[in-house]
Length: 197
Image (cartoon, rainbow, N blue to C red; front, top):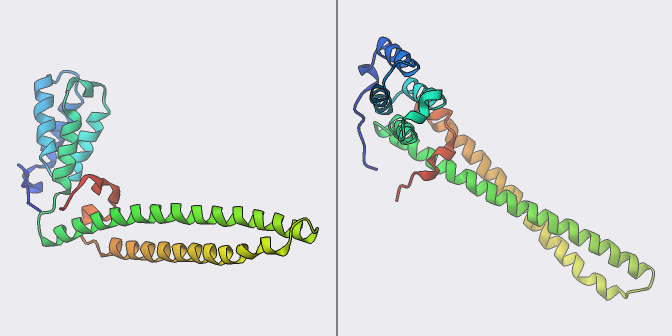
């Protein structure tokens, strides 16, 4: 992964500067060109404070005055999340692994639910056939296939349940291994657009 450096480092911006930018962002007298400069500056500061200000402004009345505000917010998010050292690189990759595993778990859950539905539908058919056999309306040969299908579906449901449990435990372990503070509570789904290949 190529490292992209921001224009600013966290220590380059003081609390007073943040306060001044915030005041101007939410002032009705600030010109559009000044709003653009402030938003572009915030987009290149890799801090949560800068991202919060950008997102708050995005929800303000004046946000529509900047055509490219969404792109600035995206760029800000990119700079904020971009890894700066080996540990962050590892943790960033761990987020991508978590995102992929969450999608795998969803896929397994869908397959599990489908197998369970098939099992329930088969049980209803089996119940009807057994009842018809008891009444003598069908012979016992109609019951034969149900036992094998029952075993197959039960096995499939158990296998999928076990796969889900293993992936969920692995996912939790990976989450615990993340040391980079700004990645710890991040929704791994933000990594959906990140491609490492």
